[in-house]
Length: 155
Image 1 (cartoon, helix red, strand yellow):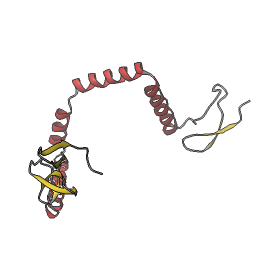
Image 2 (cartoon, one colour):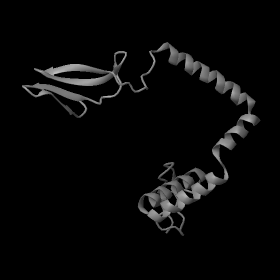
Image 3 (cartoon, helix red, strand yellow):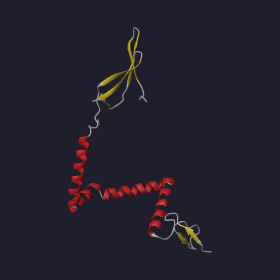
Image 4 (tube, one colour):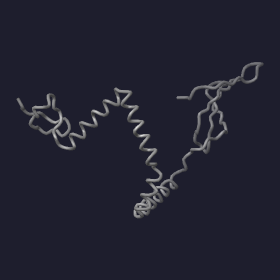
């Protein structure tokens, strides 16, 4: 009893194949690729063995075809790509220079910030920006000097 079904990928109504009991995808190439991808994702999620086999297969491929050699060869055979990429990178660099430079570098200058009566918190800062919050708390104690302890990130 053939009948019809709605394809899960493209949504078209197609005649059912009598040899497939629970048909969900039509026979088009795009829909079959979607079916295969869905099945592979489920296998990888549920099976450790499938995951290990795929990782081993990918590692073998990467060992035999290193990416840097492919990229160098591509640049040699596609000089127009190199020119266009250089122009785009120059545009990105110009945009980056217009904005204030990003603070990527760690600094070790501490700026104490008062929290409450007699308790201060220090932050590492660089040109008005907090870079790292290796914070310490300092609270003066009577006849014991200053007690310091490390605190969690504020917030």
